[in-house]
Structure formats: C-alpha cells, structure tokens
Image (cartoon, rainbow, N blue to C red):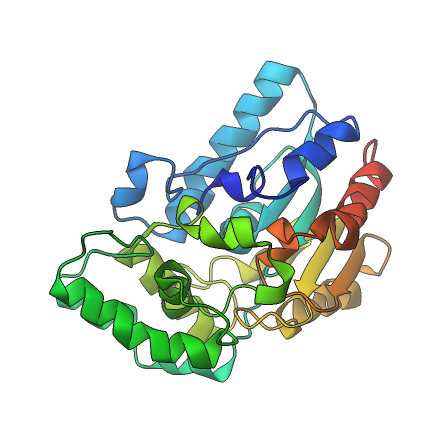
Length: 304
C-alpha cells in the first residue's frame, strides 16, 4: 500500500480532503515499502523503517514548516512501524491517531495458521522475493491457476461477495481487509491502484510479530516493549469491530496497558461498528462513521 489510501479519488471525500477542510496542513508519507516508490521492490524490515524513515520524515516536516511538533494519523503497517519508531525514541510527535494496530498483535485463526507455518520464511527460502496483488490482463497459465486457487480461499475469508482476482490476492496475502458492504463499487473495481508488491523480509517480520503477539525486532529482539514510557502522549486507538486482519483485541490490549501504567487522561479508543480493517480509512461512509473521531482527537490535541 501507499499514502494514496488516504487520498484516493474513488470515494466522495477522502481523509486528506476531510482534514484539509478542517484547516489542517496535511503531509502524506510514503516510506520505503510504499507501492508508489521503486524502493518497495527491495527487501527491508520494520526496524529499518522505524530507525530511519519516520525520524527523517518528522525532521523534514518540522524543518519546512517550522512546527515544534506534529500530529500523526497512522494505519496498519504504518502504525506498527510508527510505534516501533516511537518506542525507539522518535521525537517531535505531539499526538497520534492509531488505526487498527499499535504495540500488541492479536490475529484470527486463519492468520495464526499462516504465520505459525512460517509461510513467508518458507517462500523466502524457496527464492520468492515478493508477493503481489497485481494481476495481468494477459496472465500466463500459472497466474491463472494461482488466481483460481485463491478464489476458494477468498470466498471463505472475504465474505464471498466478488470475483475480483486482486481482491482475492489481497485476502491471501494479508487477510480479509474490509467488509465488502462498506466499499463503493468504484473503489472495489480499482483496488489495483491501492495494493501491490510486498517484499518477503517485510512479510517475515509481520509473521514474527503475529506469532509473538507484540512488537519485536526482526531477529526477535525485545527492543521495543521495555520503553512504553515513551508513549506518554495523547493517542486515539481505532479498530473496526469486524476487523479480521488484526482483531480489535489488539488495540484494547495496548490501550489497557497504557491506561494501567500511566492513567486514562491521554488515551481513548473507538471501535467502529460494521467496519473491518482498512475500510475505516476509505470506506464509502468513513467520512461520517470514522473521520469525525479523527478530527475531534486532532482538534483536542492541536495545542497540547
């Protein structure tokens, strides 16, 4: 994925437009795994993104704008690596809106099986360097066989509502990322604009996090969770009630852990009825069901 999940023109009002309409100076970040960058073809892990990409981005924004600090809206792998960066000592962040995942990871049984079998590691050893959601109009026989095989899996895991091979590949690579009824037809027909290549080292790190249940380094090092005191800042956690990628229990655990340690004043949590994972960002009615909570948190912490 890339920053275009926040700026897609396939919905009436995207998050970028919503925040701009409310007076925010909005910066979109494409870090090294973004499908909008050639760098996404290269192997990398979350530690590299946490150590280099976020500090460089925050520093650049502060230099250009003159702002003392910034507010961040982060989603999915962007949220995972952003919290790694915060726990590693990232400076200049005033408040955070965190969508779906933070420091704790709880996955459904299907994902637990895939990660428990170390499928990304096995594929890496077999020489598979990446997985892709892209399909080709003139696919060869293997690609067609692959898409046919995934169709049955997707019918089980993704509500069985469509015949879109890109949608099926997305479900296989990650999990069911959205409720079909929350997407409009235009976005669903153009999922290829929003999803693409994922390198195997990134997938291996994600699989390790799912098995471990919380943030660790690529080699399994416990280098993040001992520093929860670095999360003493205003954070809104958002989970889709029907998220089948990272269960809502994920944000509940992080939220509760922070409240227990540092008190409830800084932290809040929203579970959005009827939504899954990424549809909280680009669902056809997200502007009504999700964005107001994001704006409210940012407004509340605009001068924190």
